[in-house]
Image (cartoon, rainbow, N blue to C red; front, top):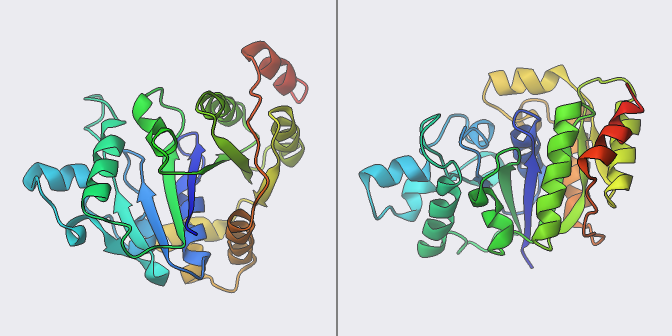
Length: 261
């Protein structure tokens, strides 16, 4: 049975890094769909930026599978939805158009074992709920650090997951070396009725790999960082414990966070 997951989180928190390295680590067929307007989710898997669905459809209204789906490291299939120019149009439109096209061209005909959607989570736009709302994804995982704005976005994402009756599988703590970071994120997870499924430490190997348009798994396969991504994807694939989140009110969130100030 295919495992379909959506990874949400604040812009710049490391979703794309997490997604690409999870895909690189998984030993079975994987399909990665970048739903972020930056369109950089699959760069380290393919080794370069790939044409987005929106850009492709500007030139060709009826693109084929091979026009929008590209093969990356570890035989991962990769797609970028794309988005409008900054400041113009609805960023969620790319997600909606992409989902419709992928259905039309039978993009999942290869029957991948794992499908991962990388979704921006700090934009208030209905398009970003598409993977969950339209049942493309079955489970949600939130990437956050111990920073205020990252956790604030994570709490808002939890509100959206609850509204859509989604299944929250856990929190991925992508560390930024904040004081008491793991303690902060662990308490946050508990307060919204979920758990920390993985703690990924900050590592120079990530920057070195991304500079070379590679995943950590490809460039540093024997590193401790690669082992952590291996463990993370296996935890997610085998996870059978989910919750309907209980997000905090703004007042509750402020009280929680200021305990650590």
